[in-house]
Structure formats: structure tokens, C-alpha cells
Image (cartoon, rainbow, N blue to C red; front, side, top):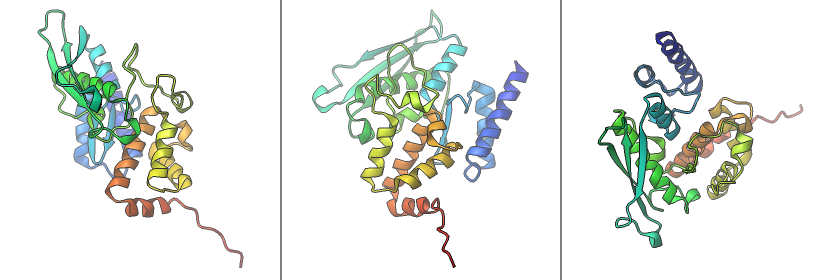
Length: 255
């Protein structure tokens, strides 16, 4: 077991250094080491994300942790008195039972158009339930990290049906059989909304995901990139455009 944990620590540190070489400080690498040792979270499986100089746990990572710790059950309930269907505001209560005799750890999650990205409007109910589950799981297992799904700019509402597990290949996730907006559509919408160069955005995405093409990246990485791109565009579009221009190849002029 110790050897397995050591291997995971080594793998997480290697991936983190390769993926965020200029953003990770020695302190953040130490935090990653501690998270790996304590919770067995894996970057390659999409359990952790590093956004805006902070570590975030993911919904998938929390669920995998609960399975490893033999969680007895998770119960969710819509809070009708606090919800407003007309305004598309939803509040859920989630209770996590670590053991069959546990009184439960309670977490609440809310979502409405004001605290969700515009590209996922209409999916607030599912986002609220996911946030509630995440908060209850974080309480149950003592995780102080915020989950990425609790961020206001989060773009990917998970399908809370039979499975919470994310897709791992870009072609399959690009479909919308579960009613979610396709990742490709989300990215195109952001490009149109902020009038960005699609070719440069794809080059930026490929570098961010560490793949030759965006299609070769995992769903979690693509979602993280979309979140990052939207945040940068909102904060300072001109700065983002300058950053994107650095990905353009110089044109050779014949002498």
C-alpha cells in the first residue's frame, strides 16, 4: 500500500511539473504531496485541478474517494421552499453516510443563472445537486479544498443519473446524449462571445492540455481549459488576446 502511494505521489508530481511548470511553487507541490498521501487523489484520473494558482478537487475525485473509504450512501433532496423554478434557482440538501450507523454529514448546494456560466444555463438543477453532494463529501472526509464544480464559472454540469464518472476521450464526450451542451459547442460559444481567433485558441488549448490536439485531451482537461479561458477573457480580454498571439507562427518572407 505504501509503495502504491509513493508511486502515485511521484506520478502526480511529475504530471503537475509538466503541466504547470511556471505556475506551481514549492509550497503548492508540497500541498499536492500531502493531498496525495492523505486522500489518494490522482491528477491523471481527473481528481484534482490547478486553476488560478489554487488546487481544486473534482466531483469525480470525491466520489472515487468515497468508494475507497467504503461510503455507505449518499442521499439528496430538493429544497422546494428555497427553490424558485421560475427564476431557475435550485437548492439541494445532500447527506453522506460514511457508515450504516452514521448520522450523516450534510451539505447544501445552490445554483441559479447568476452563479453559473452562461453556457450552461438551463442545467442549474443538476449543478445544484452536484454542489450539494460535493460539500457533503468534503465535510465527511475532511477535505478543505473547494471543489471545481462549486466555482461560479464552472462550465460542465455532470449528468446525475446512473453514473458520475466522466468520459476520458474527447470524441465521446463531444456528444450531447445526456442533454448537456457539447464541450466543442461551449468552446465555440466563448470564441464567438469574446471574438477570439479559433486557431490560436486551439493552439493554447493543446499546450494547456499537454496534447498535440484538443481531441487527444481528457474531458477533465478540456473542461479545465474552458474554465480558465472564460476566466481570462472576463478579467482582461486584451491581455488574453496578446497571450493568444504568442501562439501564432511567424510568416516567412521570401527575400
